[in-house]
Length: 212
Image (cartoon, rainbow, N blue to C red; front, side, top):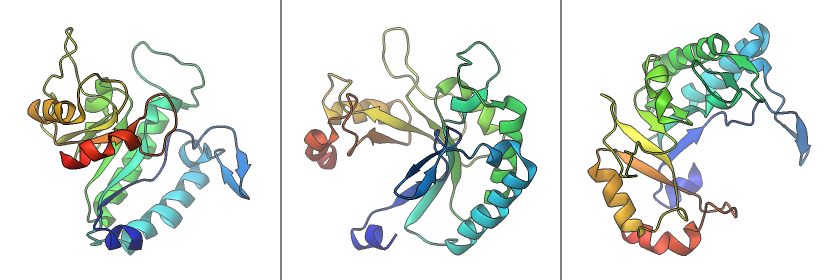
């Protein structure tokens, strides 16, 4: 937060990512993954919500550098979602995940002063998580028509695009962002400055994004 303030940046913190319930591994003496009990164990859930989440919201309530909280990124990754889909590697029933997120959302409404959301892996689930009374919606990718053109978001809440891949479009960065904004999205995040995978060429395109 101090670094962000020093460089006049704003932050949206992602509190849980899609790997939190993966098999546990130790990296630099810290456990990554292995936290399924946050969702499906009563004591584990309560400990996380009241010993980690609530104190975090209370400590940074009113901090203007933090402009939002993403309670979880891609909860569908480990959840048996309604309707057809790939169930490989799923750990939680839809009811378990929705119950957990309902409790987390209620605590965010009570203790956080910044807006909060749930990151979606698919536009199809926006309505599902909107029922938890989030402040804004976030979709992994924008809605597109059959011709591949970006369509307006079908939501009464503001919608952000969470992962514009900086290498997967022939459009120039300015054109890509202009198209997203013109369609009615309130903002977009570019994936990713540090990812060295095939989806990212952000370091090379950063000057163009900054110019926009």
